[in-house]
Length: 241
Image 1 (tube, rainbow, N blue to C red):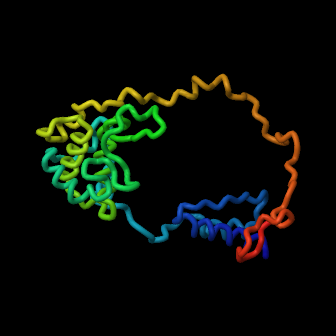
Image 2 (image 1 turned 90 degrees about the vertical axis):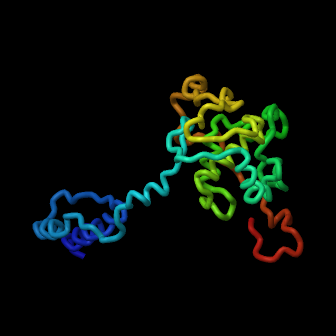
Image 3 (image 1 turned 60 degrees about the horizontal axis):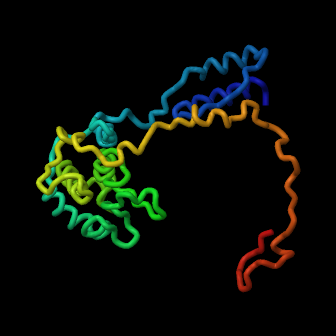
């Protein structure tokens, strides 16, 4: 293949990859022939592949539903503890238990205070999570299991209020709204801090880490499964050493 043909092929491939976001790395010839330059110039201008389109504002809004700890992103709406209890019993209790205690191996939603230092810590809104937005965002995004995002905003507010009630954070008469969302402090909000390893662990960092030939000795194979006959009897298929 001539040099001009090679340059034309690479340039054509660059154009084909341009629409996919992929990049072809290549070195420019030191002294390309005149024919090669002309061939490359013919296809140098990037071309759109005609695939896809820009997302509509409504499509972006459907995905951009994250709720920040300070309440930013919350939709309008409200929901009471009483309303949340009705929804919880029909949509959530089968997995999470009638009182948030968890059914079988499904997650526990209530209780667990004082358990974080024990052998079996229970991470719930009342014992672990520092912000209410974690509960609201997850319920809104992923629940109920198998039918995610089927709840209205008012229903999510109500369920969040009921989970707060199960954790003794609010009274039974409480109604959660966008306006009072950040007014109830979470019990473990002070149990979190910013990652400070860059300063607290700097003394342990090696400024000159080993990059080549770092092992003092080369690992040696001391036994093989076929030799010591550890393959279970009746096991079908080839043995692997």
